[in-house]
Image 1 (cartoon, rainbow, N blue to C red):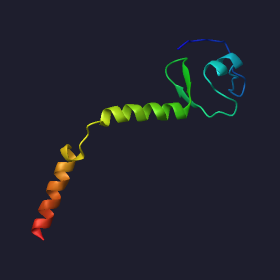
Image 2 (image 1 turned 60 degrees about the vertical axis):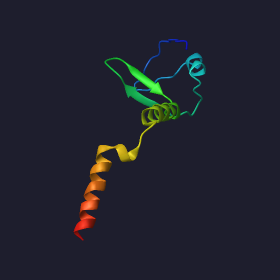
Image 3 (image 1 turned 135 degrees about the horizontal axis):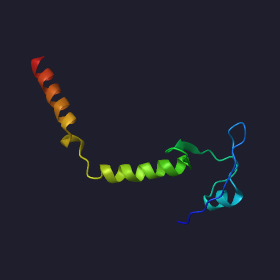
Amino acid sequence: MSFMSETVSIDEKGRLVLPKKVRQEAHISTRSKLVVRASGVGRVELSDPKVLTAQARVIGAKKLSGWKEEDHEATSYLLGSMKTKNETR
C-alpha cells in the first residue's frame, strides 16, 4: 500500500476536488459514492462503502466461525423459559 498526499482547497460551499492522481491511486471513479467520516480534529476520511462492507463481512466471518447458537447464554435462557411455559400448559 502506498500513500500519497496532495493539498486541496475547500470552496465556499464546503466542496473539494480530489486530484486525479489521488483518485487513480485509490481506484475512485467519477460518480462514486463515498462514506465521509470526521476522525479527529482536522482529519477527514473518505471510504468506499463497498470496501467497508467487504471488510466487515470478513471480520464478522472470523468472529463468528465456530459459533454455536445453542451454546449462547441468551439462547439457553430462552429455550429454558420456553420449556417452562410449555410444561405449565
